[in-house]
Image (cartoon, rainbow, N blue to C red; front, side, top):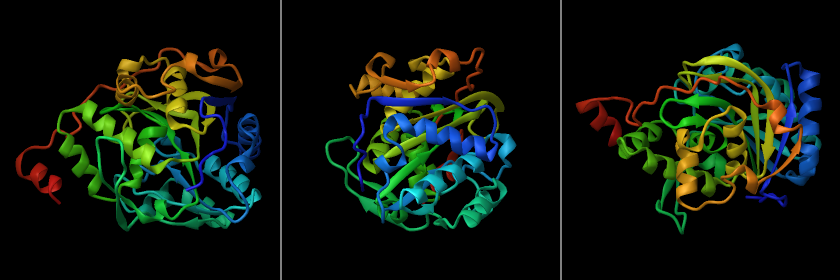
Length: 312
C-alpha cells in the first residue's frame, strides 16, 4: 500500500455549511491544498479504495453514513489525479448493495465511473509489534495501492466516538465484526486497542472526515443529526481523530480509542502535538454536543446467541 509522503502531524480543516455538489468539491480541494492536494496521495495508475461509513441503509439526512456528495467530490479528485477508483465497505446491518443504494452512494458510484467493491472475501494478515498477531480483513482492502478513509463524525455508544480509526473496522467482513465485539466482552480498552492496531495495519494514506452534519446522542445508528459545518483531513487517522474529539468538545477519557492511544504512548494524541492548517479550529468548534450513553461492547446479548456469534 502506498504511504502518504506528507507530515503525519498535520491536519487540515475547512468550513462547509451544505452538501451542495459544487461547494463540496471546492471545499475538499481547499481542504487538501495544505496537504499537497490529492496528487500528494494518488499517483497515475494507482488503485484507489474509498472506504466510507456504510453502517446501515439510511437516507443521507439521517447522518448515519458518509454523505454521497462528499464521496462524489473525493472520487472526482482521485480520478483527476490519475487513480482508478473503487469504493467498498462491509456494513454492520444489511447487504453492501442495499446500504449503498439507500444511502445515495451507489448512485454516485455509478454516475462517477467508480467501481463498487463490496467487502466479501476475508484474508488473514499477521501484523507484528502489537498485541494482536492476526486479523481477518477484506481482500479488497489489501488489493488497493491507496486507501482513502471517509468516516462520518458520530457518537458511538460503545467507544464514545467513531471517526477515522473506528471507520477502518469496516475492513472486517460480516459476522467477524460482532465476533470481535463479543471476544472483547466488557473490556472496552481491549476492544479500543484492537481498533487502533487494525487501523495501523490497514494504514490509510488519507482520512477525510464528513463533519458537515454529524451525529450526537445515541450513535452510531440511532442518534440525532447535528450541524457541525466542517471537514477534516490528514494522513494519520489518530491525528485526525484528536482534532475531531476537540471539534465537538469531548474529553479524551470519553473516547475509548483516544484514551487507549494515550495510555499506550501513541503519537498525535494531543492538540499541541499537531500542526493545524486551514480554517481555525476555535471557529469551527461547537458547543453543547450530546455524547452517547455508553453500553458494553458485547451488545448486551445473553447466553446461546452470544456464544453462537462469538464462535461463528
